[in-house]
Length: 149
Length: 83
Image (cartoon, rainbow over all chains, first blue to last red; front, side, top):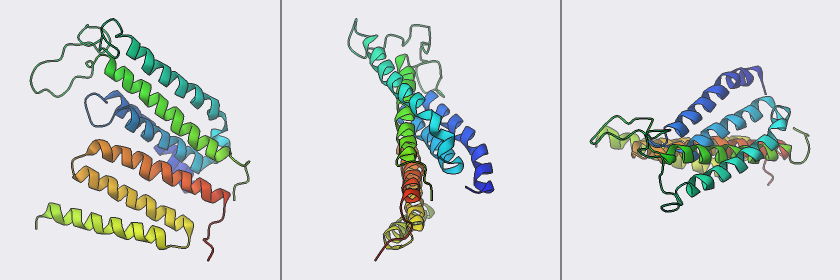
């Protein structure tokens, strides 16, 4: 693509990745979550591909495949964490550890360190969506060789 | 009529116009751009109807990813539609 597109892409790819991470991290507080943030982050991969061509994303195929597998496995493992009570029981909520702060009653601005396993599940879904959609875009670019017209 | 309803009517008219344009245009790259623009307008309408969750998903998948996939498909095939 042209110099204009490449310059804008250099600025916008980190911004899109950061916003995707923000949407995933705040999935239990604000609109959005794992899927939405993952789709935003995967659009950064699509922008990278459209701006810099197939060669820029050729090496990302197997990392994306591994990321998708890790996301799926992490989601199921987090579900099995609560198997002492029920499947998907929220064992981390209110425990005081990671994402385990007790939630103040009544209306509040939303505290990041709450939610128990839900933020971790958002990250698992987010990694799975980044891996899946990114792998789809990269494979689409690699299909049929590199004869770009 | 309130300003709120007027904005929504303008967005919906532009959305229908963009969708008709996407079908009608013979230059497929312009058609893909029209489809992406109408998808972005749909995301804006979702936001105005107070569904920001759906709006983020529509903007990410509908406007960005499908446009990129269509542009990639056009790079592998022909740009003009044949009669």
